[in-house]
Image 1 (cartoon, one colour):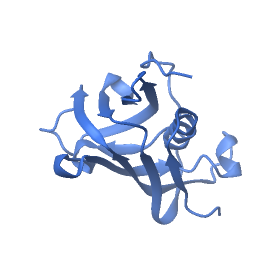
Image 2: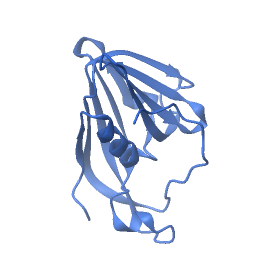
Image 3: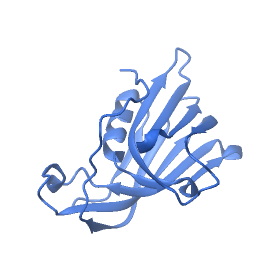
Image 4: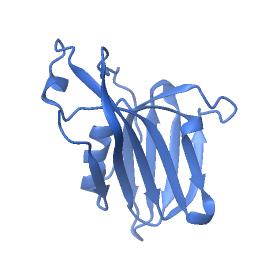
Length: 155
């Protein structure tokens, strides 16, 4: 089994890699924290291990998940739509991350969830880290999604 991932994103191309690694992340509002004084936002969840060779085989049934944390630094503001803090255990499945970088390098990172929920994080720059924690476990389910409209991403 591959080693746990630790990915650092500082450029928009890095965010595309992070988005692919995080597709299918299962989380909840209770696993998200905005640490305003530290200007940081964190998300914990159960990540599907796309980097494993078996992940590409729809018939494999030899798939794994692992607990993962996402840290976003230099955060200015956070806005959620379609995600209720009143239901901290409601399951959210991540479809993708979208990233937009303005002329002044100010960045908007959007977490696009199944069911239409979004989380928009405004930051001074791209400063994101994905870290796997603990041991992976076997799962019988491989994420599959209908094509959904997502926020634009710069290239």
